Structures are given as structure tokens and as C-alpha cells.
Image (cartoon, rainbow, N blue to C red; front, side, top):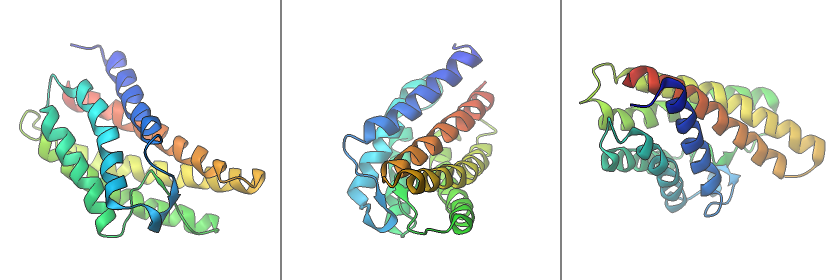
Length: 184
């Protein structure tokens, strides 16, 4: 069994590495420009390395399949592939408010789907739904607001990418800490 710190660090590396790896196949874009196929690729890019960390506790196939399903469904219903989309608004206040809304809804969807993979081996797995909702609700407003400010400062869209990278780092840290807590 992994020590708590080792598990958390591996989770952060897997999640953040999955995001960075996804950038080879996905183009960061505004919300309406990300398609279902791109969301599927992104979902697999995140879920596959995470499943390697969870292999002792959870079916890897279920984890990948349900995570993939969540990203595809969120994109199909119009929420977008949170974590890969840049909000189209130029208002910091709207980015904060919409970020919290998108984080709660998207995090809930991801958490609920992943809960289907972890509910059998872990009696308190329902908390994973709340962990995801809160993690994304915290990370999206922070990351997209920083991205907006960096884009304004530099005049480059690359600032938005840096904001999304911050979003994923926050999500990786918060979910890693809580995944370890729930699986111990």
C-alpha cells in the first residue's frame, strides 16, 4: 500500500500529467468549440493515468469508462469540457460566478460518474461526488480569472492556457488529498 503522501503525489502527477498529455490532441478553445470527440479524448487522457493509481481499489476499466462518459455527456448537453474550455466572457465577475456554477455542475457530473466505479469497494464513496463538485467550484473561478488577467497583461491567448493549467493543478491537489482520505 502506498503511503498517504506518495499516493497524493502520484495522483497529482497522474491528473496533471493527463491534462498536459491531452494538450497534444486537444486544442484549448472557447466553450462552444470543443466537440464530443475531443471531450472523449480528454476524459481518457485524465482517467487512464488516474486508474493506474487506483488499481488496488477500483476497476480500471470502470474508472476510465465512467469518467469518459461524464466528459462526453457534459459536452453533449452544452456545459462543455470544463478544464479545456475558456469562458467567452471578458468580465472577471462573470468568470467567477460562471466558474463556480460550471464547477459545481461539472464536478458533480464527474463525481457521480466516478462514484459508479468506486461505490462497491468504498462505503463512503458518495463523498467523492461532493469532493469533485467543491474542487472544481474552487479551481475553475481561480484558474479562469488568473488566465483572463494573464491574457490581458500579455495580450496572448497563452495566458488562458496558463489559467487552465492552474485550474487542473488545484483540482489535482484537492481531489488527490480527498481520494487518499476516502480510500484508506
